[in-house]
Amino acid sequence: MNRNFWQLVIPIAMVVITLAVYSYVTREREDETEIVRIEKGVFEIVVTGMGELEALESTQIMIPEVLSNRTVRIRRIAITDLVKEGTVVEKGDYVATLDPSDVEERMRSAEDGLEMFRIQLDNAKIDSSLVLSAARDEIRQANDYVLDQEIRVEQSIYESVAVQRQAQISLETAQRSLEQKQRNYIQLQRLHELFIQRAKDNVKQFEDEKAMLEQLQRDLVITAPGDGLVVYARGRDNEKVKVGSQVSHWSPLIATLPDLSTLQSVAYIKEIDISKIKTGLPVRVSIDAFPDVEFEGVVTRVANVGQEVEGEFYSAFKVEIKVNTNGKLLLPGMTSSNAIVVKSIKDAILVPRLAVFNDDQIGSFVYKRVGLSGIVKQQIETSGENDSFYKVEMGLELGDRVMMQAPLNSNDLDVNILK
Image (cartoon, rainbow, N blue to C red; front, side, top):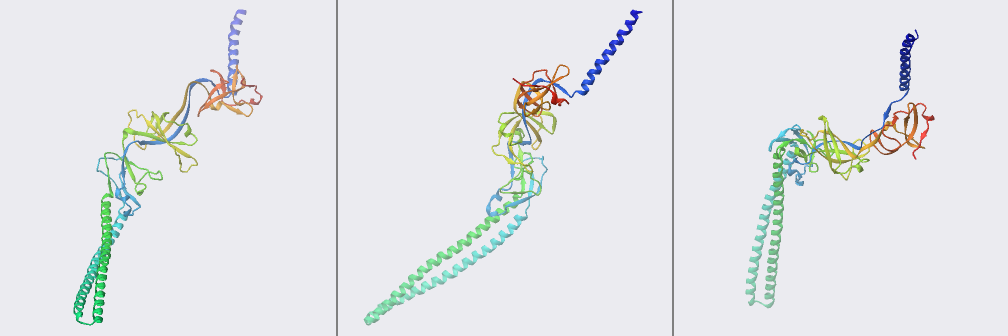
């Protein structure tokens, strides 16, 4: 009977003990916050910036060159038609049309001005002919009068001295009058030559202006200067050019034909992080068009001057990143996320950011598990952080367990201070 009794009691006791242990462990886990083990891993400090793909080299599609001539006096001109972005064109293919209304108005003004100055030129020539002809007649008359006075002087030799003297004075007066009219004629001739030349210059100016405007009228239809994929340019407000946008001598770019073999990712990094960025740093590039692919990149250029971010209260610096396409067809304008690896350390002891707490007296610390249920406040020393982890220098070892949340009795716990 005793043997049968123990055969029955021992299994029942084992089941009770197992249930009691399970109940204790389960109750402890239910009361306990999440715990993580300290592990080694790669610690990275990463600066992230959004951007888009741009071509390092491209052929530019510009406004007509004649618009840069000041005599045209058209400061801005609107785009009235534009092929769709991404259109593949060949050299000479149609790209855009510019608004002709200002050019037509300037053309009418130039034609009116040309007609007016042509009339002025004709009038100047007629006036010159009439005035100079009258002046030549006066010179001939003055010359004839001198000849008459010379004859009187010759005849006066038979007269009294007083008559001879009077004849000589009349001759000298006639000669001076002739010389004066000859000098006046030269001045009149120069003056009318100047009037005519001015009129000719005005006519030439308006003829040149009309010729430029005629050329501009032909050039308002923009064609591709080469083969490629049309990508809209960005204006001075950083907005893409579109139908209705204004282009000018100061903002002449309409679109580009990028060289797809020179694509790069252009990111804008906040001013608080830009001091960490240097050329040569590796970059992990994510492109929205290829969500499952991570591209490798490297920083090639960091801008020295920042620019204000519209709608924000900080400045950003332009960072250019060369991208390895991995055989994918990347296109300008694709949105990119650029994770620039500022620092990378292998086999670093890492602790999650959520497990690190701060106190004015002991600084950074964690709630470290000791034994099965013990907890202490463990002071730690860190030497870097990223979005997920702190890099631990002192205070924790591989395999230590730390709590992600403060326990209920946190104020009663012992503190383990670093020595």
